[in-house]
Image: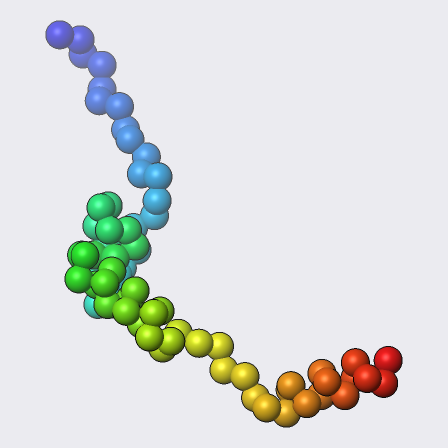
Length: 69
């Protein structure tokens, strides 16, 4: 055997907490901690819970500018 020190492995990703429950994330389900939290997030995407809010007056302003220009 050699007297060399063990090689230090640098992780590829920074450790972050699960966006659903704030537990440490797991490598298999990154960035989530478990398949359950991964499924909860997917359900929110598919049900439309993650939507960018749009105001109606922004739509009217963009329509008016395109006709004038």
